[in-house]
Image 1: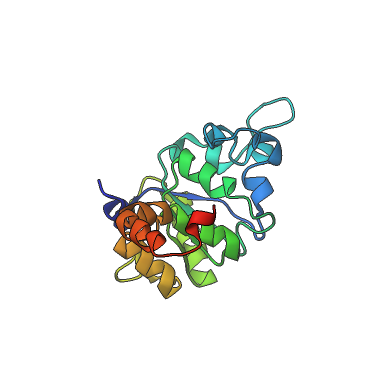
Image 2: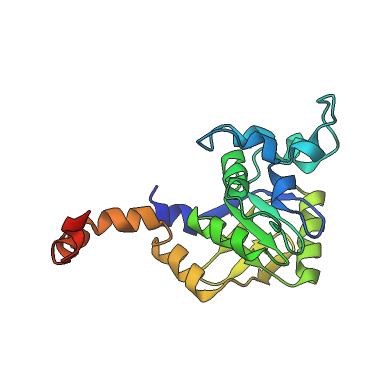
Length: 202
């Protein structure tokens, strides 16, 4: 599957995490950010609210076996606020999340999601609450997020979602991966560098 197909194919089960202002330290506590890679972060998503100090599981959606294959996370207002750590969307992605739907997202968190090819779309609070209710009632229903029509379909029907045009076009066009864009433009970059008079100084 290509990067573009992966983004366009935001179809799957949902998982709900309720609450406003859920910050990046709650998504992935800082003590788990000691590795130079992002490997293993999925094991510690929402660690402090998923487990007690003794390591016993708490009542949390990410512990619920009904959501173990969920790929679309539904949240409330200002999700991903606080520290700008890119580990938060990395941890969610490695757990299995491929798209987010919420009332609003912190700006840097949103940008970090787009950089990973993860759509983070917003919707009216009333629609979000209705979507949360139906997912909790029927967690195995399929959700379908369509970035072309900017809609999300569930068992209760189709709802409108929003996303800034620039990010939407990046995801639809497969140009969200900055490193991939640089690698694809390698010849042009080398050609340009050869014309720059100050390159030989370094």
